Amino acid sequence: MAVKHKIAVVKVGGDVLLDEAERNGLARNIKQLIDLNWRVIVLHGGGPQTNRLQTRLGLKPNKVAGRRITQAADLQVVKQAIAGEVNVDLTACLQQQGVAAFGCHGASGQLIRAEKRPPMQVSGYAERIDFGQVGDVTEINVKALMTLLDAGFTPVIATLGLGRNGEIFNINADTTVVKIAAAVKADRLFLTTQVGAVFEDLNKPESRIEVITPSSSKRLIESGVINGGMIPKVEEAISLLDSGVGAIAIVSGRNPQAFLSVIKSQGLFGTVITREA
Image (cartoon, rainbow, N blue to C red):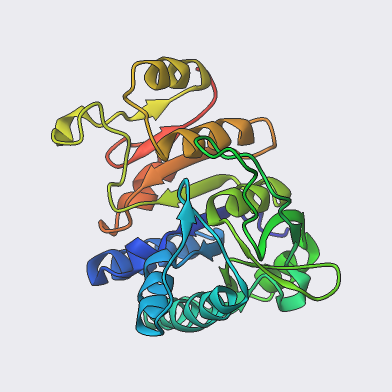
């Protein structure tokens, strides 16, 4: 009888990859899941690495409301930093821990199809903002992902999307990982951050919130506990619960037992977003 493999999707931010302890801990966490017969898909960004390379090349990073405007010259840097430096280094780190990591990007095998984001209204700006070569995801190639998983590989995907006419788009990692998790009906989605959880007070580690549900998330947003960039992360995670995804965890990979604790529902690390009890 064939073994039923559970699927975990892991989103890795570029800031996490700058820290050696975070990077190595993340790799060990992923290896532990694989050793327990989980199949893992990794999606990563690389904002800090892109900023650093832009500065080195004399380009100024341009962001509006936290979103990167990506002109032609910027896109070249994004490809070099994310699909080059970050993807290669993360793939090598995973290989070092015994993970059969397969480095790729959204254009590889048409893994991520996208279309250009139309000019949009942004709070605080009178005119609509054109973000340039920034795309919105239209389709995930589930067949290609499952083929890689069935062959024993762990896809490590750089956040680039492929357009209808072969264009390359810079795409948002947070929204893309949600699309991937929904498409493969992941049993767990891990959103890795350096903070590693939602806290009532960031200065008090003991104030970590272990579990968030749809109803409690509303209260936490209204009270200001969940604020800033964490609001869209939590809201998108909540929306996933109706798409066949088992549960979502905001967690740091620094501790090599963190992912294992989450799948065993031990409540020792991170914040789990799940359905109402």
